[in-house]
View 1: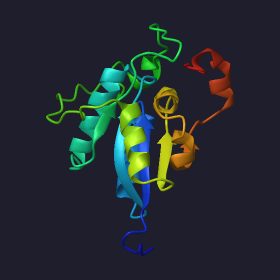
View 2: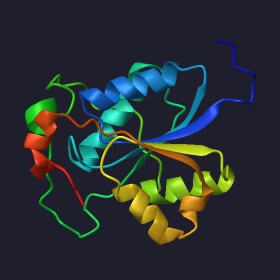
View 3: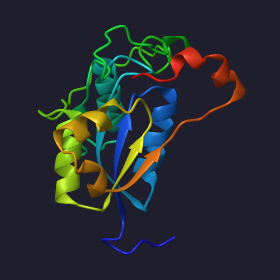
View 4: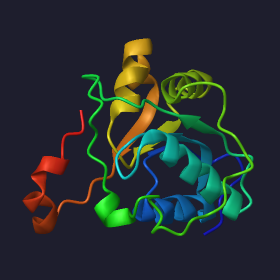
Length: 175
């Protein structure tokens, strides 16, 4: 499918990179229809600092260090510090315990919420926010700018619900 220059859909992927999110990120980066403006990280599959490290590693692995990574909140909206992390699914590092080297690149010097607000102000109505984890960064973006939801072109919440997942309902509702 040929994509006319300038018609790519602008996306920000809000992610807690485990194995599942890594695949989604790689697919988005390879899509000729998408322009990935950045990755914002959150807790979920792993703690936020490790999510940021994983996001940077994934971008380095495919030679896309031009894409910024903004680290998100380390706490839930309710300020809970005991987070429900899915290490039993993705390993303690989130990527199957592969012990990858520390990334050479660094995250941008702004929070995920600030990055989200900044990008939607720069491209009002044009940014699709794809959320692959807890929605904390979006909630914090709304706290920063109550008009944030109106500035998003589309929000795509990606949650896979199955009978198995429902059996572990204690994992749902991070905030």
